[in-house]
Image 1: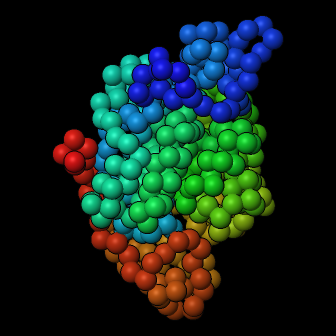
Image 2: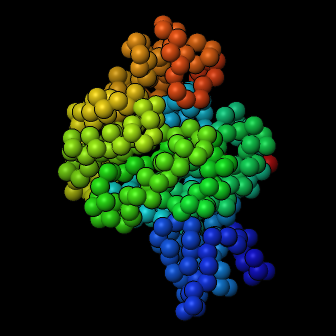
Image 3: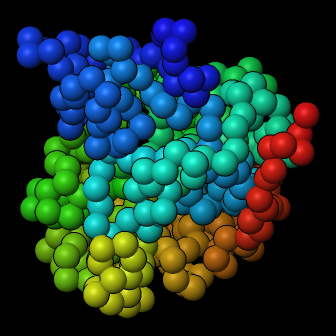
Length: 364
């Protein structure tokens, strides 16, 4: 890092120089090749002084305490509050982005709040949060900041959660997930055509990330698919996706099928009917997925967790509010003693559906 760098700009590791004078970013499969002064597609990583730098270190688009179920994570510390934040920029170009004002932002002034990793960890403790989530935009693009925050949180006994599209290369992926306790990964569709035309990315690197998480880490992870009418909602695609999940990741990985609402560059596409989500959930479960959920709709049946052996309702949910809790202190079904996959404590949290903005400036 040179003395000319602003305080929110830091040097990075994953890049190399090209013979033509450009510098290639190796963080994600886009491999952006940048002339001096150019920024990558994510907009927050740039070629400065013939190296790739991160330009948003320590700056956020805002902080908020959410229910962990909103990430969504249904099998990770249910009912507990999570301190959530993001920065700006994204390494995908999803035409249906639901957070486009943050992830597509090219205005660094969007980043109104600043906080060091140590301060974020300290505030999480002060506010009785059990975890901190990197969300709103993809933490892959603020790799260095996310890892530093995760390390500071672990020092305070706070868990780290990544909400991500999983579009990252092998070496930084290994470093990143070394510090994550849980993740929700967007499996946006199950065709290369969808990924290329609607996100500007490719499917295989995401599948590689999912297999890495399952077979090479102890990170608890769940999957989310935003079901978009006419684009990734066919029974055939849901069949293929859910069969792949069971075969490659196992029956215990939860799948969330969430409703699309018209946004960003797809305002001409109608909202997802609730029946479409129910059908996707039923297909997944018929293919062996033990825990499939509907999201972004009011569906207590599709949002609750059931024992895959005896059918008992283990965790009842009404939106983000927990109701029934039929797990014993070891995380097993009280009726038949079958373990429920996930990370659970003896009792659930009671945060409910609250969404509480956090002003970092109010915390010394």
